[in-house]
Image 1 (cartoon, chains in turn brown, red):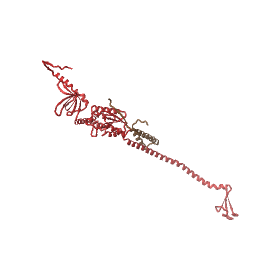
Image 2: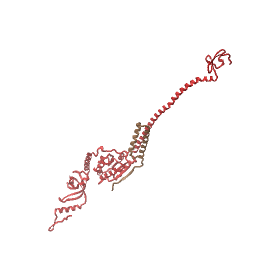
Image 3: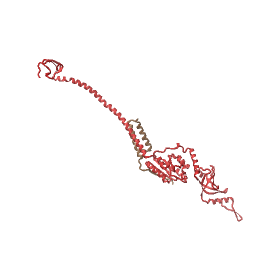
Image 4: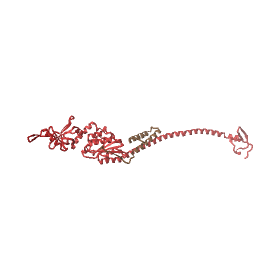
Length: 63
Length: 385
C-alpha cells in the first residue's frame, strides 16, 4: 500500500473498518472487501512500526 | 577635533570651562569598558527621547551615578526594569560636557539578584497571561505518532541523551531532529527562537521538545524571556517544555502545549509505546477477523436454510410420485392373475377357497372354475391323490 498518510490516519481508518464490519449492516461482498481493506491497513500500520533504531538528524544554527 | 589650548596669562595656563570639560571627557574616553552594579534610584524613559536616563545608587554608601543608554538598545533588552531593582550596567565613563557631569554611557543592562528577576518575571507573567498566551484553550493536542520529533537543546549531553534514549526504547520507528544551540547567557533567547522556527519548519517535525537540564536561576532565564515565551506560543507545531527541574517553572512552561518534569517524561509524552500500539493494532485485527467470521457465518446459515428448502423440494415431489406408483402397483397386482389365466391357466375354487391339492375336495363337491374370460360351474367326478 503506497500510503502517504500518517500512521494515525491509517489507524483511524482501520478502526472505522472494524466498526462498520461489527455493525454488520453490509452485504457479504462489501464485507469481504472491507475485511481485505482492514487487513491491508493493519499491515500498513505494522509496517510503519518496523524500525530497528531511532533515526537522528542533526541541525546546526547558522554560523 | 577641536584643540584644547589654554589661554596664557603671563606664565599661567588657563582653560575655558568647555575646553576643560572636553579635555577630561577625552581622557575618560580612553578608559576601558566596565561593569557597574547599582540599584535603580531613578528611571526616565520617554518615547520621544533618544536616550533613557537612569540614576544608579550604591545601597551601602548612597553614592550615585548617572547612566544613559540609547533608547533603542534599552527597548531591545525588554527588561521591564523598575526603580528599586539592582542592575549591572556595562559601559564607559562619560562626561556630559555641557554640565561637567560624570556618568556612565551604557551599552547594555542586566538585571541581577533573584529578587529583582522574580519581580520582573511575575510582572511579565501577568502581562502575558492577560494577553491569553497561557490559556488552556490555546493548548494543542500532541500528535500520538509523530513522523519526527524536533529537539531543541544546548550542548547538554544528559538532557539530550535521556530524551533520545527513551524515544528509541519506546518507539524507534520515528526520527529525532536535534538542534543544538546556545541556551544560556547572552544571545540565548534569540538563538532559542531561531531554533524553534527552524525545527517547526522541518517537513517531518510534528512536535518540538524544548529541553535542558537543571541550572542556576540565571541559566534558566532565557526560557522565561518574553521573545522565547512568545515564540513558544506562536510555534506552528505543538511544543513540549522540559526545562530544568521540577521546581523550576520558566515561563515557557506556561506557553507550551505540554510540560514535562524531565527529558524522559517528555519522551513519554511525544512518542507512544510501540508495544501498546502493537497490542491495540492486534486487537483491531482480531475484531476484524471475528466480525467477518460472524458475518460469513450468518450468511452461511441463511444459505443453508435455502439449501434445505432446495433439497426438500425433490423429496416432496418423489413422495407424491411414489404414492402414485404405489397406487398403480396395487392395481397392477390385482390384475396379475388375469394375465396368467390368459395363458390358459384356470383358478379352481371350492366353497370360495382356491383349491391347491386334490385332497381338499371330495367326489361330488361343487367347483367354480375361473377362466381368462368367464367361469364354469362343475362337480368333482373322481379324486386322485
